[in-house]
Image 1 (cartoon, chains in turn green, cyan):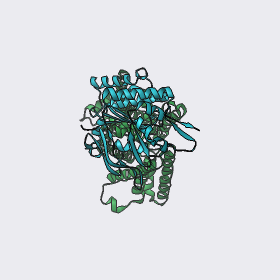
Image 2: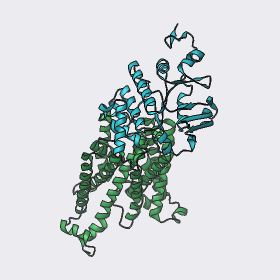
Image 3: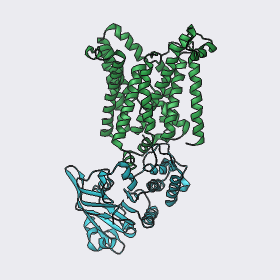
Length: 338
Length: 254
């Protein structure tokens, strides 16, 4: 890693810390900055400010960090695996698959399954199974077609198909469950309460570690699978590792936060623009930190008084869509990789 | 002596479609060998099979007496480097980073390079004369430059065997001869076993120590002089209106 990129990483860590603290201070209830920060360090404080910070704002900020870094890394893994700069969990239908899994559980309520599992586990399992099913389909399609554009179209079609099935479930589903599902579908980092946060962390953190553990092999994959194999990478095993990691990350984050668009697709491009390399030993940590910052930023924006009520996905689209358009427009850097 | 690469009654191809059969060939150290054959004759499949990336459909491939399929991926990568046709789309990677990837089989889990690795990378860049390109990205290089960079990457892998799939495709005559001279020097000076596939018959006959010819689903094996004398070349390219001229070692349209 060059000196410049090492400094960039440090700057991103600082930016994350600042955004994280801001996140604790900003919200619908105005809090005194000193009270809010004191609540972090004084567990005995049972005042109103302390309760808001500890049970509402802290879990939301931590969720944003986990979900943002997880989705960003998920997007980078998919872009490297499919050698396609426009791959990402929402574009290739993973989020839709996860949504379908959640919809089946929340709306169709297969009681035989729910009797076996606590509800929050069931939602994760549903989302994970949905994401993995779509990912497996996409990987087969990738093998068969070997064409980046066709793969993206297949991903979009899978997304539409999942959306259609979800629509049917919504019409047929019970009224009470419908409201919960619609709210979930708008995407939010605020729905993860303290009790469920460890569960999200228990899935996302190993996923991130698995990605960091694979950086060398990911670099080899940039040259293509044959070159990677000739450099000593066990390619089938590596493909399986990436598949499980992306499925777990996209599935669990979607289960907890709803389908969040653009973070996975756009963040690796922002990170590449920052560090100017595709070398994963630099790009992967950079993507992880950029993802956390962007998620905190987006969530901060919808909490600013005046913007309250905006769905999270509107903000991620505002930030993400221009990035993707810019990637296509400038074309030169990644054009040969598509 | 243990040969870097040898085959025994090997057949290559796909289930239900044998491309080449009965291959018994030895690739010795310090040899530059050319693989010649018509399009679709199985050149790439043969190279991939020798590289252990594709199982032979019969017979065996051995590297230093060990069967290539029994080696771990890393152990195989320490013995055998591969250069494929064309240039990979490697994203935002500068030339030095790409050449440094050749060190992957030798580095630790995160691929950190030590001083020895850096020296080997410098040597590889120097050997194929691409030191001046280190900061550029692969996408902006000419075909000849990109091909030399990929060869530098294979050299950095520091293996006794190198297999190259049509390294001279897309190159003009000057660059073809230049590349072949470099490979010949590498084979002779560093005692590497180098096998390359090519359509450039004339340069191959002039500069390679031996030629392998895929003809009639068999692999003919011998020196350039033997190939010309035996008439196998004429048999291989016996298209209408094409005649082999032994004096110039090339085919002439008549």
